[in-house]
Length: 76
Picture 1 (spheres, helix red, strand yellow):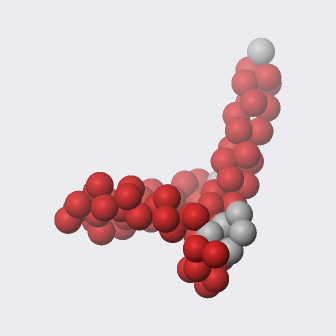
Picture 2 (cartoon, one colour; picture 1 turned 90 degrees about the vertical axis):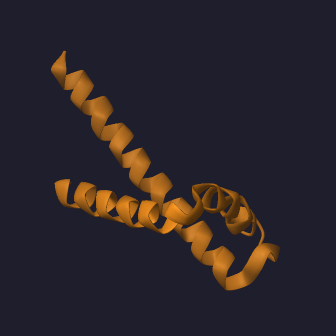
């Protein structure tokens, strides 16, 4: 029974890593080529309201997320 949960957990972790890479590449391509880039262009347009909603604490939240992601990377 635990083997099934372990397999599902590993599968979901791998999917999460792949989706994280897709988001990172889409933001990178959007920065390089602007909003006119097909498929990736709207990444920054969609990300800007999220950052604006964070307010003045946005930088602290982003730094905290980077630290959490670094911790999770070392956990793997």
